[in-house]
Length: 423
Picture 1 (cartoon, helix red, strand yellow):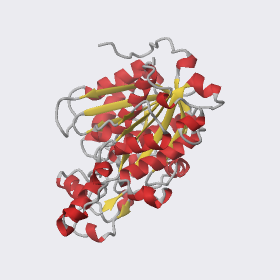
Picture 2 (cartoon, helix red, strand yellow):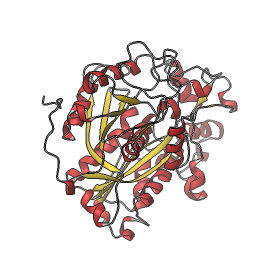
Picture 3 (spheres, helix red, strand yellow):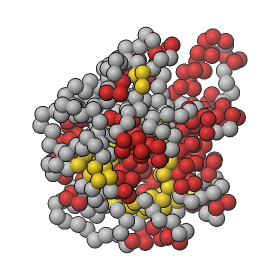
């Protein structure tokens, strides 16, 4: 297998053919838009809170990182009632990203060819909350009271479909379902669509909204969640010796991708270049990472970007605050990119928004490249011994010419995407 190597760079793709990021949208535990999300990251602010709902009282884990605003509040009442919370979040983020890219109205109304606009929104659990809620209705009130909108609300592809309807996108509405790698896989899929000339504009991202007693109980039974109920803001602590599991989060992140030549023709200055992506699977274990899948996905992403390992100066890690996963990923990063590579885990502040993580963290990576600032990792009070990467505990200004964002999911899914500074 050909792989990226130190000090060897392939010839860069023609500037006009570069795929660039021209729009960003997010709804996260740190805020209801990209600005508040980014400001929260740089401040080192935690979005994790204690759950004071009655349904949480008997759960072993009573902390989570919900969205800072209710996405339903951004939609009309009729529209909100027809959508699961995950689709509501995806639509809110997509609207922000679409407008941020300079588009007003549907694809056709903006002058784009609708048959050349595609949507790729990943999710892991989809409309699970609606499914569970309507099952409760079935049991309590009978089948005649189940919502006629149950099926479209719970379809895994619901978020992609509803974003596609909103934008009038006719080149495809796709839904990667790859657990916590889904958001990054969506970004990689969008890159493929543009390189294959199946679209001119692709709206990509991930969404998840499953903070619910059943899902919380399920993850708790796996012993995957932090039980630091008494201090929620200190619960998510990647690479810290005191880490005891991840914190359930929710949200959505959306990016608008297009060719550099098209962005220039519209007078848009992109945030960054989406230079490459990799997708692999472990075929090892449903929960534990295994084999060389993480190494291969990083090699594929860097090679496709036409870069060497030495070019990557920052990694937005998957690091979820679990005892096993954090150090394994850090070791792979140190081996491939070198000891002292600057690494951050924004999950220390947002919790783990599952399928939305890769998209939300891609936005953070894009903004690190764009602004030359790496967000901190908070709660790293007693670093694990043998940690060979550089994890800033405060926001750090530095030149970020090339950065990579990692996402790994249950089932052995691995996805990494590379962003570079504009030429």
